[in-house]
Amino acid sequence: MSPTASKTGQQPMAREETAGDRFQRNGKGNRMAINLVFLLGNLTRDPVLRRIPNGNAVADIGLAINEEKKTRDGETEETVTFLDVVAWGRQAEACAEYLRKGSSVFVEGRLQRDEWTDKEGNKKMKIKVRAERIQFMSRPAPKRTDPDEETAE
Image 1 (cartoon, helix red, strand yellow):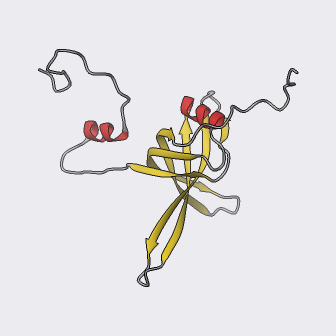
Image 2 (spheres, one colour):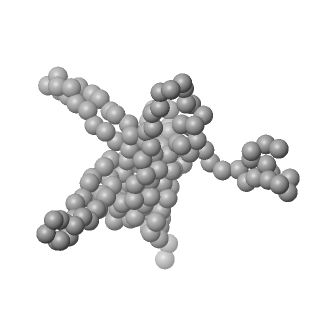
Image 3 (cartoon, helix red, strand yellow):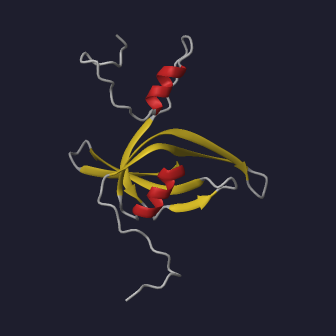
């Protein structure tokens, strides 16, 4: 019996591959590397949707993650971490359509390092999160409408 077959002989429900699945599939020798993040936070701005030359959708999302800690004095201290998240394809389109500043999301993804050279010739680097999956934790905002469209009355 295969590890995925049930005792009743029914085929299991198909599920989407996750970053953890890819780690297990791609493991090589004794070297182990895991690049996997899980984040729960709120959007700092509306997602920005753009299209790359081949037509694929890309959404840039700002995420704030709040954390509360107790200090030695027993006081509660809140810190906020800000991250940039990048979503691709249909997921990017859904984020741009349904999410707004303040929306709560759960992100599963991996860290991605972007490097470039600025106009002055200085090398720059930024760590972003490439989203594998984004779950909307708050009620989706109403669909955006094109401001150029006239509404029928």
